[in-house]
Length: 125
Ligand SMILES: [Zn+2]
Image (cartoon, rainbow, N blue to C red; front, side):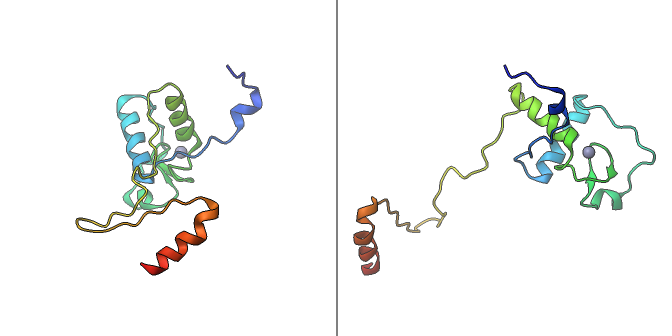
């Protein structure tokens, strides 16, 4: 276990590897489940506020975006560390472009000294 010093609590939590919409949906779900407490607001946000790119769904005000919210990031990474949120791998499982039905894909894996030879073969295709 790594012991955290006081200075660590002020460090910037890493970004959440999800889209803004996914993060906002997560925050809404946590607010609904009571995982996050509703933040008291001076005035309820209007639709125009919510459309502002610097609107935070958690703090319910303009200042920073939801993905940029340190409180949300901290909560997310805490839940990931507890195994309550499975961090999605955002890379595609299939690295090849989808050419649809009947499409063709040419794949090439070559050792360094064979590259020249393979390149010549590709030119012939
Ligand atoms: Zn916030």
